[in-house]
Length: 355
Image (cartoon, rainbow, N blue to C red):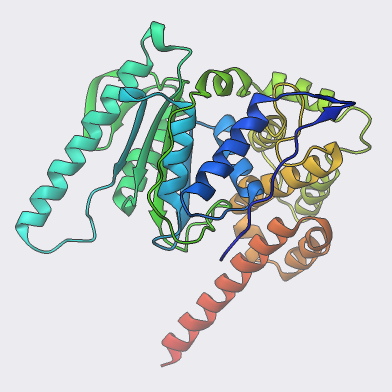
């Protein structure tokens, strides 16, 4: 799907332009992507940036050759300097399979990636590097790497102790450094992620702009501070969480309650949708920025974790669609795609059983 990149105009007060480094970073990311021959919607790029402010790990998915690796390269160039701070490497050639020689090469490559990750974790953990951003990108990862380098690590990060990563098992736990971003790209259409629709890629070539220090200063990972910031930036907006609360209310009437941790995660995402200076990263107008951020939070954080009750109740599906279809297009599209895909799968299984 081809998308065109929109340009975010700097905020102006009279004849004075208020510079915002986070807005500039997203603009430069859009420019670097365009220079590499890839067209992307600015909201998708801003979403990728906000998601990384919100959490240290991200997966970009989509069909092969759609620009995912270019996006990772361009962001790494902007956030980190050269050397150990910026590592973008391909995942192992899992698709090769077959001959013993290929299996051996896959094993060697897996060990190389594990050692590289451990090296970067150790470098990022050094006190003198605390204010420097480190970016590790693994492109074209396999399902096994998704599990060992992302899912498994994400579970361990809840306890802030890494005991295994890739095929490496540690004798002493390591904390996951807060200044490290781990990004993967995966060639699949079955793994939902908002920023996955790009046209065919070309080689990315851009010099490091090192916006990493600003990124580290501006991101929020503390729920209390996120609530405080959100209240500040939406002050004067009537019912700023109306969309989130409406969806929550619908689920509650069907016996499904959002856990407090999920609501905290939504607030963290919404708060990170504004720059440290209080400017919207999706749209300069506060209500529009809030609408877009709420839509993305529902589509990426809430609905994917609530699919079981949704798929089991046509009434719940209809009520959610009535809320989402007007002003929350991404959430509505996600819900429709997931429910229709699930129903198609059920029908196919029933047909195969009868046959």
